[in-house]
Length: 340
Figure 1 (cartoon, rainbow, N blue to C red):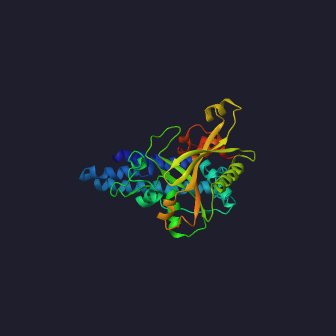
Figure 2 (tube, one colour):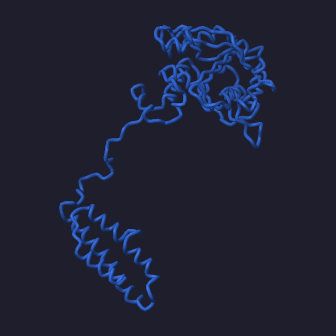
């Protein structure tokens, strides 16, 4: 062991450093936590008692020699041609920072919100964990409705009266409970359904739902509002149609389709050969819902509508797999820089 100390001491004395890289290698070899000097101090406890004094003295000499040598070489490099130029700003990133962009789902959300804000709709938000009243009962979901089943809803295990909201209609209930008509609001947000994840479905997605309540609001008012939205979003020549449907909280209810066309093979595939594409659900607010929220259905009427943001983004940007919106793949997201 004593012979090793002498060899290390000679190695340090003869060391020649020509660059910062050489100096860093020297530091790592001798002075870092896993370097030679710290390892020798660890091995000191295994030295025979009769040699400890001599070994300890020489080990301290070696440590001081290594530290002194490091400081001298560091000073020589700074005084030579390798010193750092004081005019260099070390806070500047070494490479140009690539600008990011908004997520396609967020871009569609902002565009839809902007369209409805132009005709007087305000934005309202609410909690993602909802009680049964706001998520189901106030929206005219009977106790036996399949949407209450565990296959569709993520219930909170400790309290089944609470669940992750399945739609942003719960926000509309809160608005109606706390605000008297006229009400004109849209509710964008994240919702949750207990569904298998695939190219066309996900257990997490985003919705924008709208609500308009006032005196003498009619089905024709709803159609004109949605036609305005469709032409602002899809183009001024867009055609729409309304098909009868069913939702517990609206009556009558409808699905709105836009005419997508049949010019390409993709058009045939997307529209299943009809040329029409379903984009949202809508209907006149059921009187039971108004009554549940403290609004007199004999005085006021209204309409509601809702659309999935991911589905709308898939159509707008021709994305074939919904899962891509959630994977945070930079190769996918980079494609939307031009769209922002």
